[in-house]
Length: 273
Image (cartoon, rainbow, N blue to C red; front, top):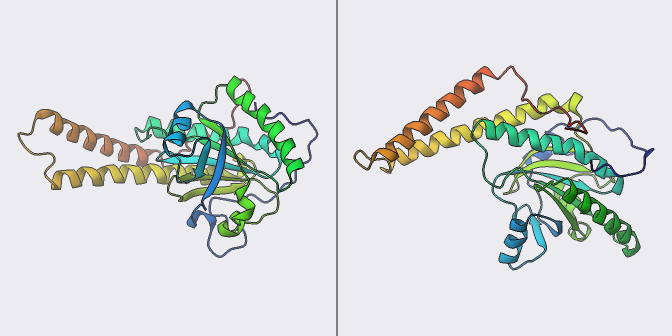
């Protein structure tokens, strides 16, 4: 578990914010774009470190443009005790990954989780953060969370990140499910509130599955129209097209049957599980 803060920490309950959270604005956050945020890498996979070096920015990552293609979970921390929210979002990440894989819609390198620490302006306060981050990094390595990465940034205040995102800078943590192009699929604050937010999250997962299935069908139709799958070009191509079409049809039928059922796996992870 990443909950290493001393017991008895005080938490303030806020009203649950759904994926269409407005945060006082006319346009919900889910219809905005994630602002660019340069970050330092503290805990990452060798592949991510190599990718950063190949970009000429070793040890650095820019959210969201440097993320692998696909959907990811980003958690923005303003307070050290907010690390306690990570367990609930780890469960959400695992559920997304499991559902996409079960339906044959998962993309290589996606559904990773990025814990981004928004460091304070004053250096003495940053020392406490760095000490805690070293502990969190050790825990991630011990528990083999290879798809969870620890980041930090000092650029958020200078760039006016909260103002660009049009969200309150009041010390709360923000969690977002987003694409690497900046599109936000889900946004809420603090921990994932299963009893209030599960149905809304299930709806977002289903919408993403529908989008990917439709995208597969469009690509198949386009390839047929462009003459990529021609008669006599060989059995493998025709067989692949038939398999893809059958898979898309099966996914559409299963999607219809499961409309009334919740997506499995959005239950909070047990400590021993």
